[in-house]
Length: 153
Image (cartoon, rainbow, N blue to C red):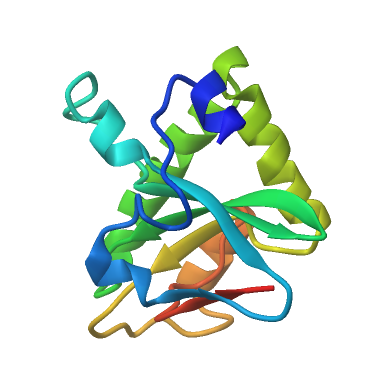
């Protein structure tokens, strides 16, 4: 929560910043626990209404504390990949600012732990496949194909 406060964001306990409709799709296993969450989209929508904003940051503790960035978004076609990459670019720009330094460090901790830090959560249908054009585009930017659920730990 200190990292969110340093960034000027309002943090929530556990995964409470994530809308209820998505919370059940994010879980932990083993010794991992949720440490906090933030709704970036809500925080920045008034100041940046036309930007492609990333939705959530979720903190975890599993030996170390780390953060994952989760974006619920349709995965119905390749045009959605372009939207997701714009959202990712927006998020990475935020993480490079001095106020977000602690959140950037938690993101790096996730990557050092072997986690993919930027995650696309979807419901509905998708036609993306491993090894396909979309998978390559996402992998080049540090993401993987959309997931129906995210399990951490």
